[in-house]
Image (cartoon, rainbow, N blue to C red; front, side):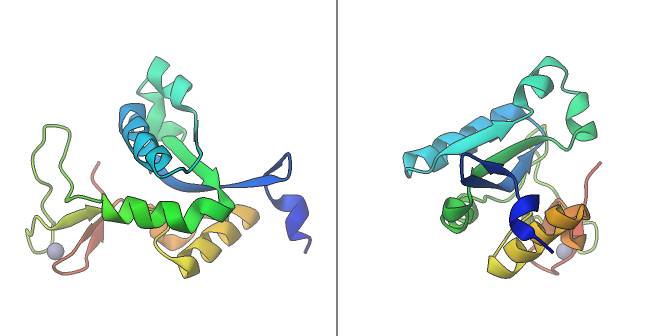
Length: 147
Ligand SMILES: [Zn+2]
């Protein structure tokens, strides 16, 4: 296996996707927060999604990428600003299992171990199991998706 050949390599800078957003406005807010900490942020597909929001789900949302060397720092910042989630109307999202509203948006990559499996998932074209989930209940640890 030749890892280097498979990685997304652009002028010797390797990027890691650390979060996905359904709306580019949400991605822009997070982008601004990370840039305030000196992290270079690159959004992909946001122009397509702004043109046609219905496309967002089909192409996996707006992807937020950072230099891989900044990835862990960026993830820590994302965690620190990770508020309890609300839906599009601003209503708190309830866990379908225990009805708790202590629900976090569940980012794709939470720690070094999942970062490694996330990168492996990208390399082999299969996403790790946890990327299926968008939300996680803090009360009962249930992971679920809202459609
Ligand atoms: Zn729950």
